[in-house]
Length: 325
Ligand code: 1BN
Ligand code: ZN
Image (cartoon, rainbow, N blue to C red; front, top):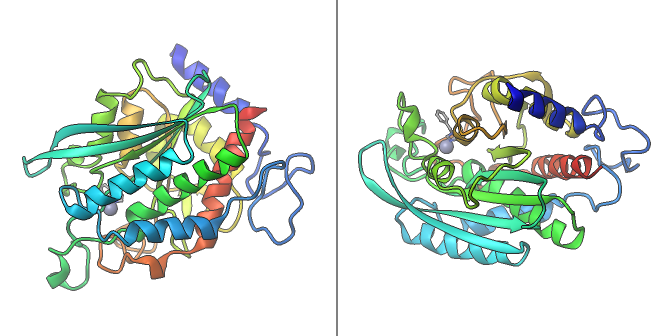
């Protein structure tokens, strides 16, 4: 109860973005008539083209399925890329059990900015890709891996680019970028088989007693027609922070409405006592609840838009600016 009150107070502290996502108050938002996303003044705008290039670099390794050479090579690259922007990088190695009962080695890759700051923001995205394209219209593809340009690379790309920009436009806030492994090996009707890297991290946080202000998870943030409504579990566990993030977001992809529910990584973080908001593309006009290429072999770079990545990255920059007030 006491913690709930604290979270409400913290959530209402994020005020600089104004009361609605699309309306820009004159003192808090830079006047850029070409921008579709409200930009809080004093930092450079988020670079969507640079994020697009970072998504492509991940896909150039091939599908990043755990226990494959492409996954191992991408882990090296993510580690060195984060090292260029963060103060410390921790590669957390662990063992988990898959939904099929197999033991699996995983790597969570964690970039820490301002390790000594007491006020911290947790940012997450999964970097692994699904071993099976089991939603593909062609059954022959169900045993093939997903490239994960959207479902994997997009969220990671936004976080890598954010870290790069914060290296130049520094912040006093502590930021922990957690790239979680083995999110996408889950099986239907077995909640615990999803988010394996995150579940491992909640049991082995990179800092003992880790308590950020709150967390934001990015998942599938690159489709040209993405729709980000306020996800159900984000509202259930962290409504004040979810509203605050949506107030910091602008542009056509953030919908000021409540959306569907998904057992994504944020559910495990919330259950561990850290309020966490999921920015995830969910659709009301599809059977799966997600974009048409979800868990198909067509989740490739042709279906990624730099404008969507920019809108999400700018929302994060705006959240950070609001926490600095
Ligand atoms: C998100 C992207 N997820 C998987 N790929 C999470 C999820 C879990 C989606 C269960 C549907 C069901
Ligand atoms: Zn997936």
